[in-house]
Each structure stands twice: as structure tokens, then as C-alpha cells.
Image (cartoon, rainbow, N blue to C red; front, side):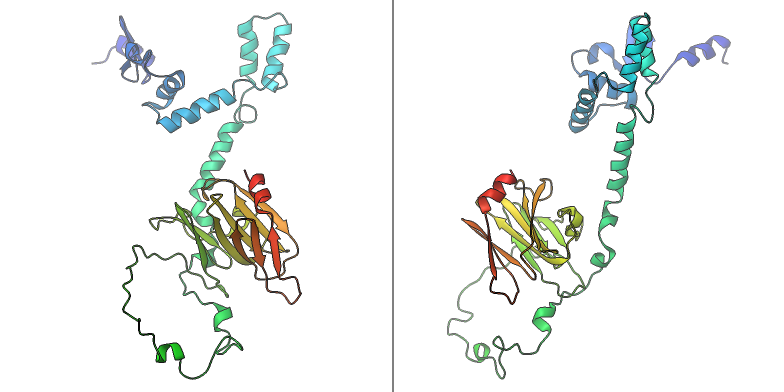
Length: 320
């Protein structure tokens, strides 16, 4: 049977702290076990959320506390507190005046920003264009448009197949260690290509790209449109990928209003940022190659100027 004294004691109890003569416990942990063993941000986390934060959560929480410790005298809450202090009230009254200014608009914007990021993260898989998610067989329109391309084809029996070399099937070859699909699209032309680095593989088609680790796992969750993911300006197609093994950088190019060339700011194409350059003197189907003294680009044009050379060192320095 519950009496009035039990109800009164229960009313004053919380799930955060348990106090009795000679005992102070937070979330089931005695205060003497917490002092000197956890940081102040970790203590706040334990009181508000219960349990201990992970190392990453604790670092992020502490960074947020440090970043928000002071926003200068021009912040509304601080200005109000200073105005209250000029009236002759004590420090407690002045601080209370500033705290009462905090809400969703002032002081709560960080929480709203975090909610926005969480919302974007929950819908990240829906950011891929629907037509790029469909599984279709890759067909290169440039290679299949004509049965015979003048200067590039032949008629009759294939001489290489008819008169095979004596060494055919006599040289041992290695079985592929890893085979995986890099993408499927119905766009025409598809123009599949790719670039290999120490820890990543970037696969591109005409209008999208996908990044894998060296075990064949997609790090982008499927094909991703290059703009605005990497290229902030609009672009249409002819996406290419290259890897500069000396500088340990990735280079992507995209046609549209000339050509845009993106150089990664570091060796990680997923987490590092990109520096993008625009060059108007390219009209169609550019291809980029990496060399020690420059980035060389060709294009499909009827003009005499079919080769362009970009200053490699300057582009890398700007992306550093």
C-alpha cells in the first residue's frame, strides 16, 4: 500500500540522479567513479542521453561546445544580458536575461541545421536520377552505329581469327582475382571508362560515375550524377576519369559550355573536396591523359586545334 510519504518521495525522484545520505549516483554510476574518469562533455551526454558516447560522438559534441562558447557582444542574447547589467542588476539576473532570449531562432539554429543534415542523409539514396538506377545493357552508339566504319573496318573473314599466331593459347595467363559490375545505363552513347588508384576505382559512363573500394564495394550507393555532386555548374555528358599516380590525385572532366576539369584536393575521391576549372575552347567528346608536365586533352572537332594542354602543377597547387 502506497502512502502519501511514498508518493512525495517518488515525485522528487528522477531517472538521472539518485541521492541518499552518503550516496550520489548518476544514471546508475556512483559519482566517485565518474570524477577524473570522464570529461565534462561526456558527463553532459550521460545525464541527457544515458550511457557513454562513442569516441566520435564525444569529439563532435566537444567541438560543438567549443564552437558555441561565445558569439561576441553583437549576439542578441549577449546584447540583452549586457543591457540588463547596465541597469545595476546582479550577474545572475543578467545571465537569466540572456538565456531567456534563446529559442528556435536564436541559439537553436544548430539543432535545426543538424535535423536538415539528418533529413538529407535519410534520402541520399533517392538523389540518384531514376533513369540511372535501372539495370540495362550497356551499348556504345559510336561503335555500333555503322556496320563498317571507313578506315576502321573490313569485310570478309577476320584475318587475325583465320590466321592465328603460333603462340596462341601457349602463354599462361592469370585468372581475374575480382570481377564486379560497375554500372548499367540506357543512355546512348554509354562511353564506359574508369580509373584505378591505390585504394579506389572510379567508373564512369557518359552521364554518371560510381566510386568503389578495391574489394568492389560501391562507396557512392550506385551511379551518381556528376553535377552538382562535383561540378557546381551545369554540364551534359562525356564524363571522363583519370588518376595522377605521382600527385595521388583524381581528375574528372565533363562537357558542357566548353569543358570542366575537376582535380581532387587529396587522394580520397569520396571524402576530399574538388577544385573545378572551366575551359571554353572544347566543343565535343574530350579525352584527358595524365603526363608529368601537363594534363593533355583531345577533342572531336573539325578545327585545326584538336589538342589542349593544361598546367598540371598549377592545377594541383590550387587544389592543395
